[in-house]
Image (cartoon, rainbow, N blue to C red; front, top):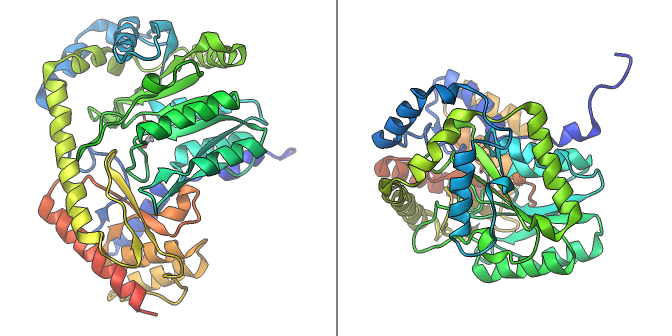
Length: 434
Ligand SMILES: Cc1ncc(COP(=O)(O)O)c(C=O)c1O
């Protein structure tokens, strides 16, 4: 090539959640049964979408309009419906014009960071959900800037760390929160949200709140929406139907802009997001058309409550099995369907392993661990080879903490118990092996 093709930011793009699948597929081909605890797709994990939602989708498919383009910002009647829902929370007030539809939040996240000025940084949580941290880092051609979620304090955000990083880095222009959080399952306490709003106001920042799991809470938790706490600070909430209906294959999510009128730079940024979608024409029409019918159906609340109850029950089972391993930091989860479990400092070393009977699988795992970026990869690869349990190393979530992320999506409670008991036994064997 006459010129270099790749942007310097491209090396920041990585997604271990799917990378580990390639390794698991290799072992599956060698006859190993894989327990997919790595990916947050409820459909893949056999969650059933209720028939009444499928009936709504079937009806919309019969409507010829669902085959056409829609307005660039999204189907108007859906945006009007969603604006009303947000306004009913009693906080930030918006109109249909403050909503922009995307082809899933993955699309929204990629667009948002790509339109930021090169030097403007968004500080996000660590451990970090890679879609945010990678896109942000790729935009800046530099490693992500993060504030700590503290495993010794329920994974709550370390607000002192957050404020210090902002105070001493004038390039930070915004704060990201993911509430409820992926990968920790933590739900931000109301007081912490209020303090984050205060910090944003003090340093003239905007807030991005990823609320894709907002209605997925359990065991007594309540997730507050950004709209409820933001007052006069500019912000963007990101919402979607991937996890809620759940319908991840719909590729349908949206951004809500709060307080556009309070800051001209923020207003221009929102306008440029709208323009970027206009250039693309629009997002997929059909799933958008289903939203008012599904969300306003009296069966929807009950449907979500049922699913949340099941996730909460799984959370309690996992809690029962893993919470008393002394070498781990374990926090019960209250939202989303993940947990990140970390090894205490000094527990892992480069001599630890797990017995693997199949010589071909053992040879592969031994090869993989020769060159790992950190010790939790070693644990994750041995765990995969020895038990078929596929989890994601926590250091791949922009974190120095050594551990792994699991999901809470296994539908069968007995299988769940078996998998997590096997996981606990593997942890003990691995730790004691050297
Ligand atoms: C926090 C968070 N935001 C966004 C997404 C992407 O959602 P979508 O399916 O709408 O692209 C995910 C998917 O796992 C997620 O966990």
